[in-house]
Image 1 (cartoon, rainbow, N blue to C red):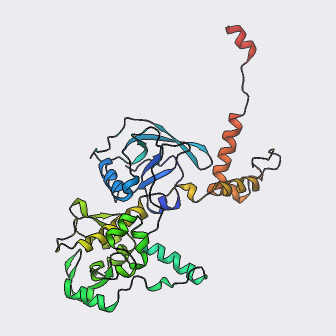
Image 2 (tube, rainbow, N blue to C red):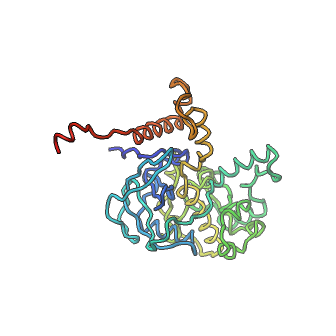
Length: 352
């Protein structure tokens, strides 16, 4: 059985990640806080509580989830209506795919403050390369995943032929890679307390405790935050994105290794970055601003100031775009809402 289609339009991020579970703010209009592909990353309310509290730290507040119906209240704009009992924050029951509202214990608090939206390390590199080529960035990020030879030597001596995840493998199948590339220091450690823990500057991340030996097939996915390690769940390996055949190389948990607090700081930062780049945010309105919507409405002759006499013909290809279809549905809703149906007065009198 396939999961029911969402009643809301998916952003490109939600579509790409094949999300099936959506958590919305208790605001009007509502916005998407969290989106998850539970075919890859099954969650419970308790797990969401632990992950968000660990990342949001001082700004985190107690909450509960509640199943909701997502209703359209404008072009690409939604409101939520509770449809079931609240789910206790510490519930470890599997969360069925669907839509949920995020409700705070404090009645006046309406929307959680999450970290600034971020892409995966690999996607950010691609964006920054384009910025560099277009003259908008001074530093060439082409080689940001490369580990200096001196650190590679230290890692090979420490790890020998042992991949962080797969165990002992032939040396030709392994390569040294960063856990958190120093280029992404301020992105991976966004709060002051996290920066203090890491001791942080990009130069201070250039150390062997921030580098590991890894199977070459896994490295591109690790750099794309497709998987990571939940240290607080017995080093459980969490899958966030599709990995194809490379996924079969991964065990369920990272094999034990000698305790190293610095290594764990970097591994935790990679995990937080993976959550932020795959689960947080992704609201459709981040891709279609109010000005973009209003401009399209004006171009189609159904803007706020239009009287409806110059509506673009229905064979105009803009009506066939996702945004055009959403605008037309809003026009129909507006016309129905503003139609004065009234009563049949004679029939009303007879019944009266």
